Image 1 (tube, rainbow, N blue to C red):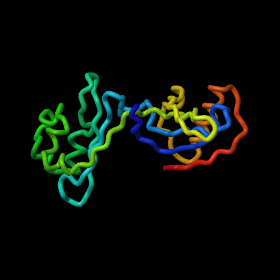
Image 2: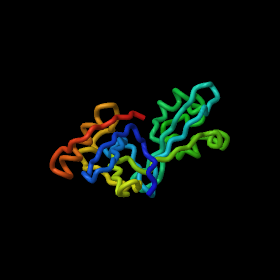
Image 3: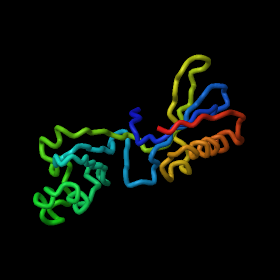
Length: 180
């Protein structure tokens, strides 16, 4: 399983009550226009495409058919890259274009491209036993997927929800918070 995602934060605690530390890792969530799956990742292209000293980013997401298209609207992209206005005079000229039709070969070569294969906030359950580390990825319930999980206090709330939903009560443990 590919676990590249829009990870925001991490918190540790004994979520399954077996005496070892498990991790809850905050991600974008599933209530977003940015969709990512194991077979059709979301992509982000980053670079100074117009060589003006400002870095632009273009997010690609799949449509209903699984084809990847840039999410950015023509108006927004041409504010950052004025050459777009000349290349695509009408909105209809821009509509339905893929990233390789918007950026030229040199721009694509210089782009940093990252992919996200999952948007879910997850529990990384440590099933390795004493002294061994074996993390099993387990998506949290839908209630934890409705918004991005980030910030210093939200992981504690998510950890509490997980404990209550999966084990019916809150355990006694201390939790350290690390924002990424």
